Length: 58
Image 1: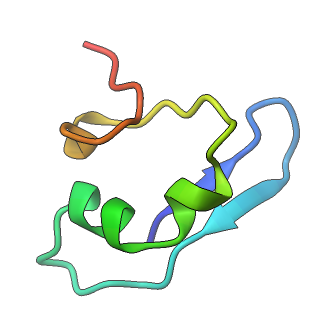
Image 2: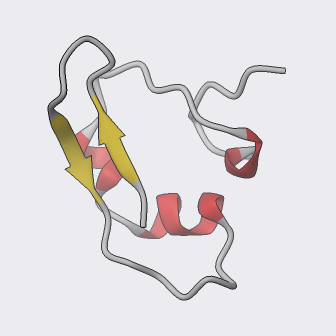
């Protein structure tokens, strides 16, 4: 399951439906409604989200 949270508050911004564990995070991101929900938001993700529009720190 992927969840987007606001780092400044305890609020959940958006979440995606659970997916089988063999699906990569990047695939789940692209197939969910999260990109549209967070279109004007800066999101930081882990390395499992390479190849998406998310910011992935080194």
